[in-house]
Length: 349
Ligand code: KG4
Ligand code: ZN
Image 1 (cartoon, rainbow, N blue to C red):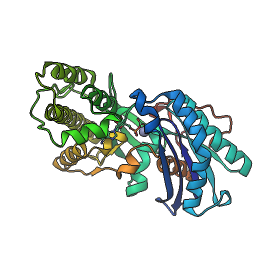
Image 2 (cartoon, protein in one colour):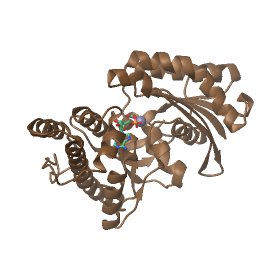
Image 3 (cartoon, rainbow, N blue to C red):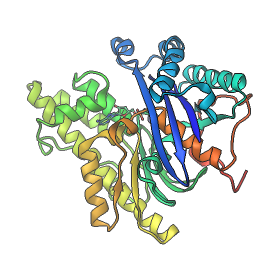
Image 4 (tube, rainbow, N blue to C red):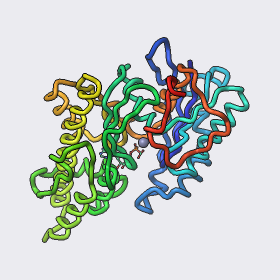
């Protein structure tokens, strides 16, 4: 089975062609991403209206590129998928209307894929991972620990009570004048810094449960920045490294608790999967890999281009749903909010 997939829920316009051969192995035939970074950079963040217009301008040619790179035409497809939410609603409309139009014109099934499910199932595309597994989903808008029991079967163990972790990276980058987007800029700056240079809090660490909080850490970074007598590149690097170390400590602590809950529920300790844009961070990956090894399990982290937003993950989630006989009606309404736990799979639809 082969699907064309579209992702337009934030500031990347993306299209991919993905195939599924046999039981569970996936092949990415093409995966093209057009970043809108340059268009949003002057504003220091994503401007939803600019994002939607840019998706509209570029999506048709990007879909054509994805098909060309795969060496396929519309007639080779078994389905057309788009992110149906959650995300910036203007962009989600552009992507899902385009996918619906192709599906209607070609008489193909349409699939509205939950963006978070795309991130959640990527480890099955890259590593053929079996259910169940524990997922740490860390992106610009989301930060949660989820038990993944099957397609459409997700149980949230905990999540952030305030900011998402990617948001904390982006705000820290702004406070340290490191530019936009924040995550990669903080990681780069931190390479030249001392992670023990600035004492920062570890919000929630040591507390029961699997929730996160990042707003206090962000405030502490602001205060530390204000108290500096001299703010130069080294001071920014030290603060970036200290912030990143605090995030690593918090994520490791919370994942440790989640592995305990997961083991109690499922009788198996892990594996732990990390997904979402923040999962691109090498320091955080190393820390989670260390935690997993010390707990007798393994960490699965997709390659960087499949961690940040992309359409291949949407295509793979669509293939998993298609294989279960699932698709969506053409009157599907795009959803700005769409929690993972509200999804259903084959057994419960
Ligand atoms: O999954 P994603 O591409 O988009 C959302 O669905 O939100 O995640 C984007 C987030 C941004 O906050 C970005 O700063 C963060 O992921 N990010 C990183 C890194 N690369 C991207 N955070 C930390 N370190 C990185 N290397
Ligand atoms: Zn994402």
